[in-house]
Image 1: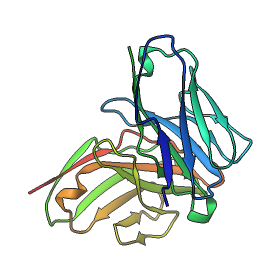
Image 2: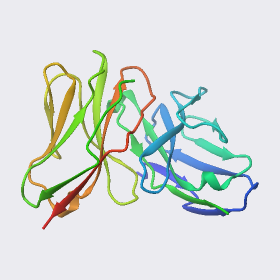
Image 3: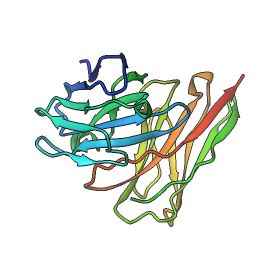
Length: 113
Length: 110
């Protein structure tokens, strides 16, 4: 049972490049989330998906897009990366069946040069 | 969502109880209190949550004041492996907008 899997683990981009961070969960959870964590800071919510087919903005959505591809997968896209998007990105999932406890992936370290 | 306030850092001697406070003075009746911790740069890990009553599990105890305006996470016998950042979060039932604050950096001292 893998839980929440994020790919890639590390990525270096040049300013203006685009990329998609992938997230998949195998716990049959309804809700999924994307957070970013800057050095020495707490986590900030980018987008979340309460259920398949729905997505909503979090605290810091600008510069990002998301797709809830199916119940298992929730991707985060950077259309034109900027140095300010250098961060560690965490994906998480939750479900009412487990009292909406968040289960996190191991993170993606993204550097934008 | 109610905001939470936590001290930025705390120290605790190994083997002693660690008591981490959280203020959530604007909490509403249908808002739960959740605690997570983050060790190094790993993804945060769930610890415990509660609504009104005190709760205990294998990891910790959660004490919520009667007016629900504050809570305390208790690690009964802290070990060096409990050194982490601890986050207190308030979440409205039926919503999914989990907002993390800056947390408390707990250092357990040998």
